[in-house]
Image 1 (cartoon, one colour):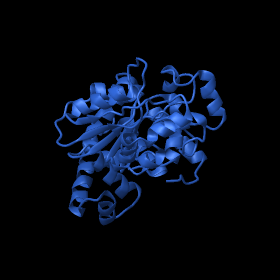
Image 2: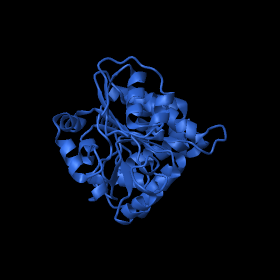
Image 3: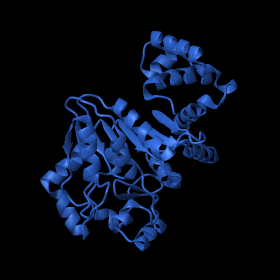
Length: 322
């Protein structure tokens, strides 16, 4: 199991102090804690063996990967779920770890934006119940009309139910039949206000979709496989809340996106905590696009994906746009 979210700060303090060579006051400033807390965390790190990572067994391998990913991509926090241990099933572990992390990121009074997808719904399905006050969970994109087991409205309302929070669905289709109709619908006061309010969220939760025939937007009937591959040829690198983004994390300039009712990347970037969860190995390029666009601050991935991200970063050391 990856390090618990509540204990991660111990590992981060040790990483900054012993690996980066920061002074205790510098560690305190970077983690926004007191110097006394840093001293306490370093003592706990020594007591538990965290500072002996380089000479220990593989116990802390995934946590080292997490810290390296934070350094390489400028992320606030990363959780890496191990895959080598036969007792762990990543398809079950990723949602469980992500649900635990998500609950620790939520504060009373928060406004939370939620996208859709199989991973997000799996998280909601295993999430513990909490009773948080004045929390609101809002849907980040329009809805799907066809029967679908993890529609945007279902993801939003199930997470709201688990938090005993208020859920706000988006009462508009995800994809319209024409650009003109979508433009007129976005101009409606209720829809316009809901889209504008996304930037006021404290936390966003989403995954990134692939641009191929296995994409959710193909399976739900929004696009045909041929249309998706044509968009990929035109520069689409991933799917964010039902929209196509390019390799820089920006919206692809295409007719499909102009027919979609969804929040834009700029609104998501304005949210302080942007939690992305990825469990499929096929999502390297979509995830790189999200990272390049500054769409992620908190990340939960498998150990395999963590290593692939680091390998890519070493081969492409240029700084990411934030």
